[in-house]
Amino acid sequence: MRNNYSFDFKNTFLNLTEYTVPYGYESQLEPCLPAGVQKDSFGNYFIRIGESTTLFTAHLDTYSRERKKVSHVLDGTIIRTDGSTILGGDNKAGVTILLYLISKRVPGTYYFFIGEEVGCLGSRAALKSDASFFAQFDRAVTFDRRKAGSIVTHQRCGRCCSDQFAEALSLQFLNQGLAYHADPYGVFTDTAVFVEVIPECTNLSSGVWGEHTSEEYVDILLLEQIARAAEGVNWEGLPAHRNIPIDYNQVA
Image (cartoon, rainbow, N blue to C red; front, side):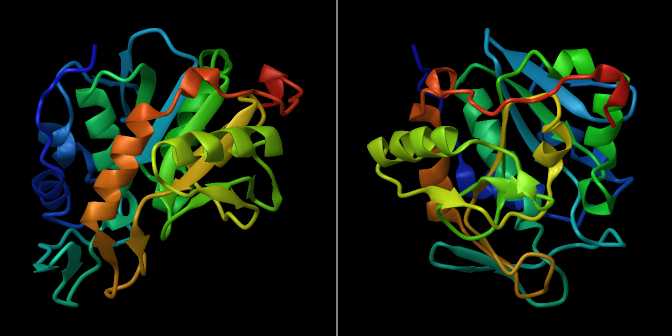
């Protein structure tokens, strides 16, 4: 049974983006993370909900060299800044979505990585430390893609998830009222680190525009719609078709 806890998307996002968070400052977000979260030896945070073969990820750092106060500007459903800093929607939009799914007790292992913007340091370290832990998952899902509607099928110029997976997930989102489609033009985020051990790895749009710039903005209503749709997806029922050669001695 899903609980009826009322999740405040706007204020959660505003709290997460109160400051820019360069690599090394991620621990200052601990008060925003859910009760029961654990911290690994490298500084990543994780929590497991129920029994699941789905890994959900987000990264806590932002594309910034300094920790700066963010001045939010709200215009209807759009949240941006006054132009003096980035917003940090990359990837606080994804963090917000994961916090919502956790609040709704959607089964999965949730990993909040550090250092994504400086080379996926946290995810690489976690995989190198215990590849067999991550090999238990059938799918790795992050909400770190710009704009709307993308199911990334290729990262680092290679395939990260199968067409069958993308098609099935597209249908799941359509059943929840959102149009998502396969997108072969992904770049690189934490899920790309796991392509050698997890069959299906993808990156999903989360309602962010202009990432890495002072023009960045988030459509908080779309973000909420994505999160609520994700709650209704049957993640465990998605296919795992992509074949991977698992050799833990060669990983990361």
